Length: 262
Image 1 (tube, rainbow, N blue to C red):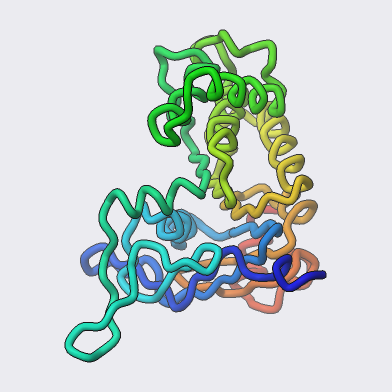
Image 2 (spheres, helix red, strand yellow):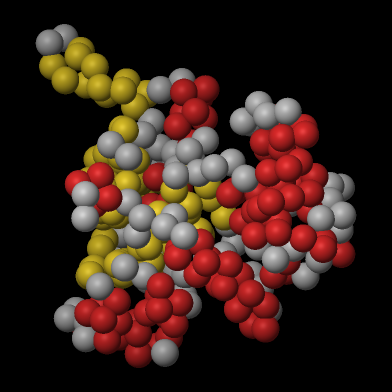
């Protein structure tokens, strides 16, 4: 395998995040190689979603560094009074960094007054600066990829939860991201709709997209993940291949969590 193929796409190095006196992330270290799938598990309140938001700079880290494709996120390195320092980037510069990252949330966040096609077109026009014809072609292509070619004219209220989440995935993919972040993408879905969203994510993983997925879907983690990270109380308790973390976990906290969810 070439060096470029194994170079990290994402690096979290001693990342801390505090909200006032509440220390949510306590120095986590996670490395995600390019083209791999990292699944993050853990109980509610463990810091999983906050870690994703720090990668995408929706939250500013309190300490440590986040790098995506070798680029420091949210800051530039500078010198202040002769010592190395970090300077916060402008909102426009952060938005430019964020444009390379697609993110799918628990809630679909679709515009209710726009069709599926309109929802996928809008960000391309206003964020990526594409012309409407090009954006429409790209939107149709991505909606077909997630199995919604026959639903491009439907409004969110006319779609099931699983279909709405697939529109959200198509919207993110239409921006040509280098990295996809999924924050519990199936947690708001009825059980019978979970499979259709996970199927799209499996296809995306097989295409070579780098993905970080926060989920409680253990079967998906076992089947698709290259790396599983188990978090609790703001720290990484255990990480490694699925066979190690999910089948033969070393840490008691991991064992207890899996015993509850399986």
